[in-house]
Image (cartoon, rainbow, N blue to C red; front, side):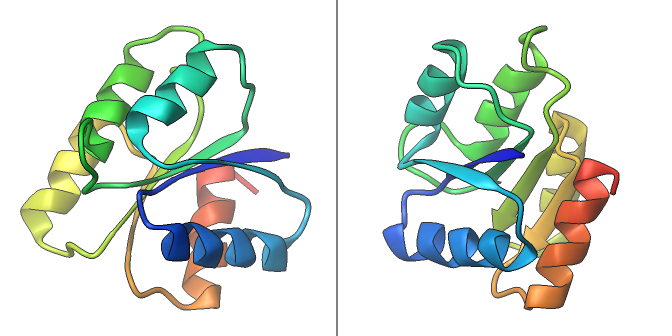
Length: 122
């Protein structure tokens, strides 16, 4: 299975990578921002899962999600939003944009694994 991690923080990408590696079975791609992630996907990168931060310079995770959901070839890819914002209205905004799940930083390995498996339907 292939996953794309999109986060402007190299440290956070490393944490998410390590969490995916702990689950096992993932080939991992990374992008430093949503523009780069979208370019990779539109350029032919095929993934089974996208993990995206909400707050980034340029395109936000919400705008990225809306773009993915509006692109027929990409619209079915599960998206998990990872953010430090736990406010109810932000969670609702993310769900309305089309995320499959929402994870608040910091997260535990168990919560991470549960959210990933739920998003993938496994």
